[in-house]
Image 1 (spheres, one colour):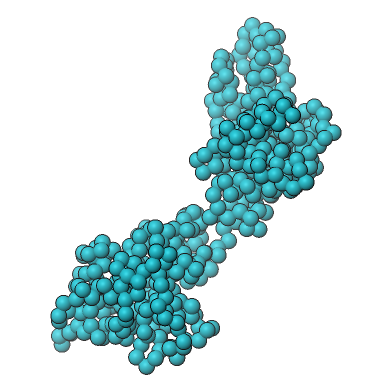
Image 2 (cartoon, rainbow, N blue to C red):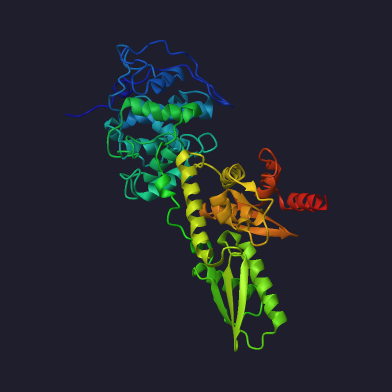
Length: 480
């Protein structure tokens, strides 16, 4: 039997012709108020807020008989009609703008399809024939139909990093792969707060038919930022720093047996740190006592730049043409390695705790994360006014274990936390004071946790200073 296509069969059960609703600069206008028009929808119904919003935006009058049928399947044609209406609201302020593309004796859904194609929101070959519009729409197909209905400035990705990390772990959205039809469009729904999937692990069920309630949810989240959702996935295990080591935090250098420049010395010292060693042996025949002291001073200056490593003392010995540099922490003696291991373990515990508590989140910028650690340092340490040159307060261990430190202890602990977060940082020294220099979201900032903790309350003037601000402030304060 020959099948005929009826626009009424395709669309009347879902939509009625509605007055055009204007798209406003601040968003989309709800032109009416839901007052119980759907007898099968109650406040405790799934997608209640979304279905009522769909009605209020003027995108659906429901089904015949005064119901909505939230659990009923949606055809591909119906999904196209809804998408065309949303595009019409955005592009023309008229949900029925697509009807200008309707021709006599052609199905109504084709008008919306042609409209979306003319707008560049769907490809010309999206459907092979109009009979496909009768078929139940899969969730993957709907993701593709919705993908380009609104531009990114209207519907921006707000959970990009969270979704990327979760998806890459293969523990979330695991039923979607690069072989899944329209998989990028599916992931975009998660990134834009339009979908979080169907279960705790974010399964999308791409090949399953979509229901009217689920489609209503996606559509209204596109229109109303207040309805968009954030995946409530526990990704703390993906960010745990447990087991991290101090060598992990050093960009490896190359060993240079006879360094003749500052760059070669820095490279050799980074090689030592990355190897987890505390000694370097150089071949430097005829090294004078003056040159050896210069070598030690230069080496300690490099260690200041890596003060999170907990080395602030060096011992030099000669044996014929070989010179051995041995690093330790002043006041720690043979317990230097014990204190270093305790520092990284404590820092990792702080890192994990802040993630587990939600103080650190995937949607935060590096600057925001750096501020969280700044607050933690200032809240959990007191300046050691009784510290001497051989005090443990000069290394990160003291801040984590004893809650006291001086500037190099503050800075070392702070840089240790930043590096566990993957944030690039170093130090700067002026006189007998040291503070952090960090690259946050591509911009260089100076951060002085010591001075930030110098009042009865945390002082934020010393967080995220520009280099110019920092040098001016530090120069002025050093004169006082």
